[in-house]
Image (cartoon, rainbow, N blue to C red; front, top):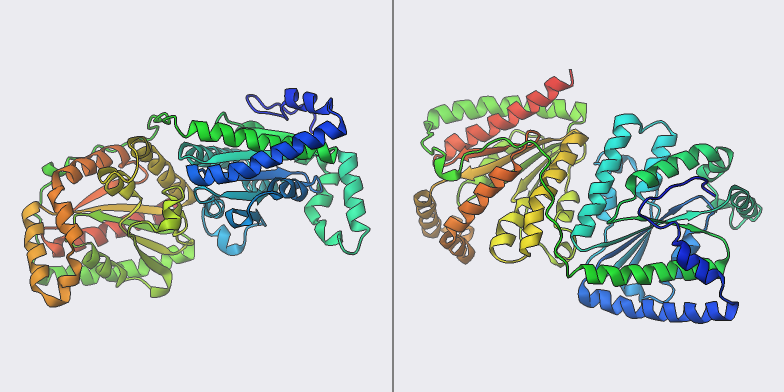
Length: 505
């Protein structure tokens, strides 16, 4: 057992329930277990109706019975609405993304279960044992994990974290039994054997992780994998009780956290000059020189393993597409990807709003360009009523946390608002309608959005006020003159990359 483990505010396992259960006879236990399983099966229909996503993280010692425990939980569930994911060590490709990226990809859709056989705890503990994560890096990772879990809970997820404990002697006995059978010895890995030999080292690492990530919104539940019937009843009861609480909690507004990041003061859009111009001749000279410079920098960021994320927002017809085209013309086609972001599809809509951006992050040394971004949450979704006020009010802080995670990973994050005035937009709309090859660019939605210009301007001003951080500042690009806008943008990207390279010298 993990001697001396303290879990303030969590359950290790709830001593009251465990004591009551242990007093039951076998017949009573079977009866209660049957009732609990029946309720869990009923709850599956309720979580579908309430659109409650349930993420069950099962961690623990090797040979403690994590797989068996998951089998208990899924036995009476409809397999169409749950997924069991055995988390393996990260691949080389996964290591080229932020630590939490692969774990964020595994979160369930609304109304479904995901059971993780190990996850961010196992990966972190292994990195600690191997000396790959310690000191400030470990502290930062644990903070990021707490933010990740809190964001999920705030966005309506049930995050149930279970640690399956087992005494050292029983663990050793189980491992020996598995090794003795040709059909089961494959289940024993190097880590399992290492845990027995270096029990205290692992115990310390697991205990520290639990202590640092045991939060009121996502507490740990430590279960002793002893008698089969007792464990089965405990975990089933725990899941049933947690689902009941989570369904009730969905009706309660989430507290809006205070912003803890330094903000760079930004002018309101109405105060931004749009007088910048450049001749076509000068534009072509400057563009050629800038693209040549950016091409060389692309090689450098690849060699240094620096990811670059460029986020484009702006008015319809402001010139985002042409701006992106001139930027990408300077990049190696194998090292960048442009993501045109439209309305979320059904799978994206049923997950945390940042999920579809986590899944589109670049590898180290590559460039990701987003034509529309995660700021849709506090613009389109806010103004069109696609999310609640509580959702978009929380999103400012969640976006800042997301971008901080990216820059801490080592990414260069550049954010553009491509700005024009209302008269210029109207002129460009009419030009598009009058030009057959450009007519596809103008839609009824563009005209509807134009009618809400003042509302959108108010929303953008608030975005600039709350999310122009020191690590990911906003750049308002004057785009009444498209040539001028393109030179501004490409030079800002160059400056951001050069600044990053300078810090690595």
